[in-house]
Image (tube, rainbow, N blue to C red; front, side):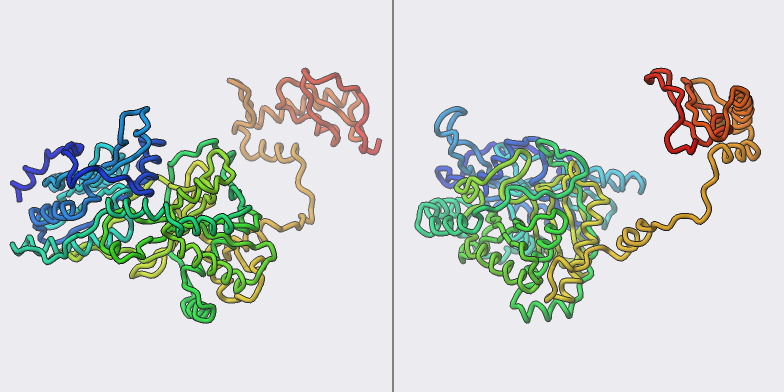
Length: 581
């Protein structure tokens, strides 16, 4: 164990510099090209990293773990592929992006021993390492696109940090990798070959097939369908923000995760009767929520699709994920049942066109653009079950939540199912929204879902949205209009009372000068006596002209008075209208 730790501790995270494997470089897929463009627009961003953390409790075989991870990289070319322009900068070929697949190279896993640190320092260092790994960008041209770091906290307590770039994996890919990781780890521990099927296709094959398909009639027909579906769609969704929207919002973000209490039986009955899935119910609820928050009645939401309809993609590791836009109109304040039918039709239509890359749709449609807004939609919806952690021999493997401080869209609403039930996670740009607003939005989503499922035949505009506490505060507490039966005490009487109770307390300050309540009371009495000697009475209106407004004496001789500064235009000594004099 000590030898393994020593040999791995100083292993640097060096770029891939080997030559390409498997012949000439293949063109990049549409998804790879999009990741490349995003990385060039914001080179220092970690927004498209996929950071994972696992707590491993038990007798870990570090050598077997290292060999299993190296085996995954050797099996799947996406984990050792970089991207590069096919020509020098400025040349015509520079616009053509190609994949460069490198030879497998062992030694991916780095190991750091934290077990000698005090508990508080070890926990602090663990959090710092997680934050560093999740926030360190990956260069798609230099690689590697996967980092692995093992932190030893105790002899039988480890934390494994895996950081992928999204260009190499999607959620489907993680399921494949978990399955093979389990089998490779068990095989290396037992000293036998792993019984894994050979990998027959890789992302180069996918990119070449995609390029040919995009030039065919099916892609053209799907593009025409998208033109019809999105004709006249709004350019932006005007969600209320914390302040003026920046011209170019940053990718800095935060995530709020809360439990989602779903009426299970009512939801299942509605899904069965309307022939929809829970995903469609949640998506339709989000459309209602966004319409209520913005006042807009034409809502477009993005949602990811696996894009793995072809049999040869079922065991392919790589970024095949695509995005489709789901548009729903609420102009007529439909019932939730009616809206569900519209969302179902739009979602199924989008799913049938999942092979057409979203970037191709945007490039062909050329939708109206506004600076700082992503095209077609700014809100993404994700629904699914959280991937189960790998089951490694003699180990208890527990996922660890990695804090993420980036956001890909203005708002991403995720509904995740795990062993504990459902959770709503809101990933949002902190330039635009604050935590309180997101907490309210999560509460509104919860209340709307329950209300819409309970009364699906009612108009969506009538569905309850406010959480009970918020309803009580807005409708009850903040709407109290009753006035007190007795008038409030006059200000000079309040000051007199304070002068009796706390005479030495500071009443007013002006720079380095301060007056106590007792001193203020004495000065006010003296000035009031002077004013009365000059004719001030309870029926006259007076203006007190002073550079320092710390005298209350005019109120002691007239209830109708006001302060004035010497810099104001000259105030004529006339009585104030409405004084009754």
